[in-house]
Length: 154
Image 1 (cartoon, one colour):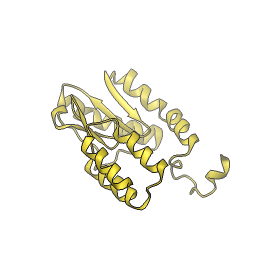
Image 2: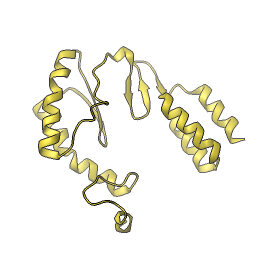
Image 3: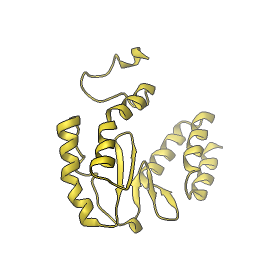
Image 4: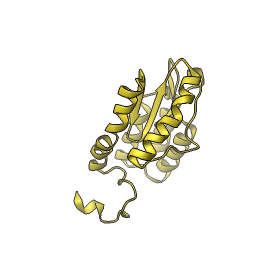
């Protein structure tokens, strides 16, 4: 495992997909998790690696949290919020998280994710790749897309 770190630039992130990355990001982000749950007392909080979602019935409350969160990330963890990825929106408009747009009663694959998946399947139709994507799209409203994947496979 240690050999996989040899090509990484010093001081720039963790290698994506590396098994140790999955563990290390959770250890590193523990302080953030504690801040969100214990200090800010956020009731509805979801995080996967460095992506997170906060839910509240009060829009202004969420907007007021942004500077506090940004301050903790910058000062304690030496991280920053991506300026183009911080949004405050209604649940009805869907939550864009981890390649999916989630609504209260269903979720759909993000268009960009779908497009990237189809392009990759055109060049790599291996059983492993197809099964990986079928596993991914099995978690949402994707019946039409499943048919498209089966068509590309053959």
